[in-house]
Image (tube, rainbow, N blue to C red; front, side, top):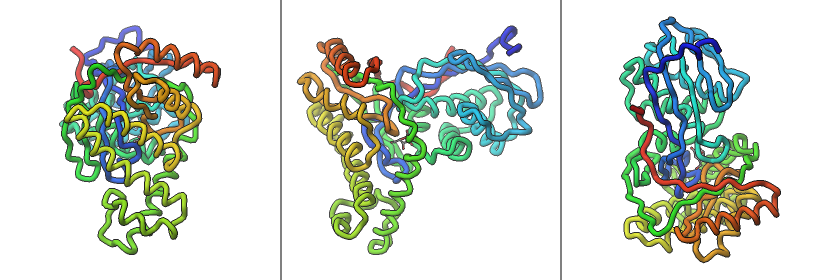
Length: 376
Ligand code: GLA
C-alpha cells in the first residue's frame, strides 16, 4: 500500500485483549462477569490523510490491508475487514464526522484464542477515531457501538463483556460487571504467590460463532418456558436454583442444562468476587474448576483440548484451579499456578499436550491491566 512510504502517525492507541476470570456466557443473559484487560494488545497508529472519504487500513502483523470509502461502507467477504467496517458504519451513523484516515495495526494478541482480539480491534479503532476527529463519544458509547458492529457486520450475537473489559479495565483489578444495569465495581486481584498462566490450545474450532448464537437461542427458549410460571422474570439472571428445579422433569434436557449452567455460573461470579476480596485463594481455584465443569458438561462449549489441559492441571498440587476462558471451543485455559513451579508446569503441560494432540502449546503469564489508552 502506497501510503505506508509516507505514513506519519499523529496518534497511537493501545487496545488490549482480555481474560475473563469467571462468568462465561452470562453477559448476554444479563448476569455477572469478572473480566480484565491483559498486557497483550493491538497497537493502532493513525494519521488523517486529508481526503474526504478514502481510508486505508494495513495490518503489519498479517501484512494485509484494504481501502474503503466512508460513503459506501458495506460488508466485506474478508472477515477481519468486517470488524473495521462495522465500527465505521456505527460511528458514521452516530457522528457523521469521520473523514479520510490511514491506520496501521500491529498485534501481539493471538487471534482465535479466546482473548478477544475482535473486541480489541473494534474498540481500538473506535477509541482512535474518537480522538483523531474529536467525536465526543463516551467510553460506554465506544463499547456499545463496537458490540453492535459485531452483531451487524460480523454476525456473532455477542454480549457486552469483551468490549467493556477492553475499554474500561483498570490495572491490578477485575471488573465485576452487572450486564443488566451496566453498573460495575473494580475488585482488586492479588493472587500472590500465584500467577495467572494461560495455556493456548492453539485450536479454535470453527463451531464458535454458530454454536455461540445457538447457545443464546437455547437460553432464550429456556427463559420463555420459565416465564410462563414466573412472568416477572426478565432474564436467566432473575432465576435461581429453586425456581429452576421445577423444570427438571419437564423441560427439554438440553435447555435445562443450559439454564442450569447460567444460574450456577452467575452465583459463582459473585462468590469469586467475595473470595478475591478476602484473598481466599483455595475458593478461587475451586470456583474455576467448578466453572469449567459447567462449561464442559452443561453448556457444552469446551472441547477435548481444553478439557485435557484442565484435567492435566488437577494432577499438579501447585495449580489452584483452571478453566477455559472466553467464548469456547478452544482458545486458552487460564491456570492459577504457584510462582515457584510455573516453568515446570508449563514444561510438563506442553509435553503432555504434544503427546496427546501433536500440537505445540503456547504458554504465557498475564496480569490484570488497564483498558484502551493513548500511547505517548
Ligand atoms: C465471547 C463473547 C462475549 C461472551 C463470551 C463468553 O467472548 O464476545 O460477549 O459472551 O464469549 O463468556
